[in-house]
Image (cartoon, rainbow, N blue to C red):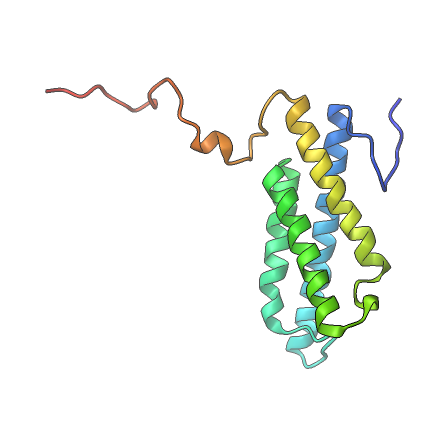
Length: 153
């Protein structure tokens, strides 16, 4: 029986690995939603935590991360973790206060760490790469593409 541990899920089964990736997906949706809300408030003149309208790009990046995690993409999991940690380090340097990271920031970072664990475990348990990773796209196969015709001289 698999334990339901939200802060360190069991990724030893395919279902557990998918669940860990889904946890990261929902954290990415949350980050994108809150960022979008702060951007909308900034557009209407209410600035929270110094958010500027340009942060909408950040929200869109997290929407992409969420979609990638929905597809069990290892690239999306690592990108989400790196992007979120980079933003927290930037805020720490900018404000000079460890409070800018916050408890919620630590919890979200843990969620992204679990999505990395889940997507990598999913790829291993599924017997290769997940369908949304780029490695299969760039791999050269032994068979020609379906529309290929032999060269005629």
